[in-house]
Image (cartoon, rainbow, N blue to C red; front, side, top):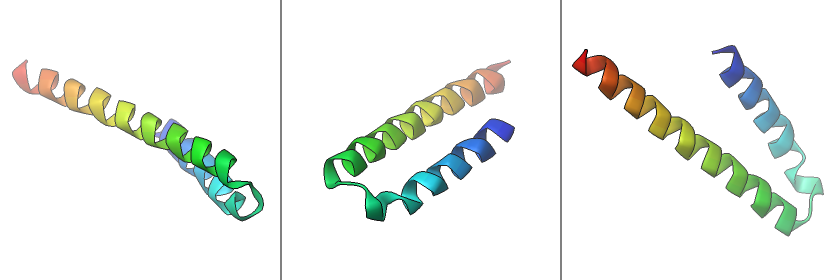
Length: 54
């Protein structure tokens, strides 16, 4: 949970600086965030489905 809070804090800092970054940099950072969230979602779904079976 602490990791998630730190990630969201970092995301807030990055989003706050979007107005000062060039568009290509913003797109790359947005892609990184989307990939991280997708991986997190897949990991959580796998973990919950395994926990439900046990």
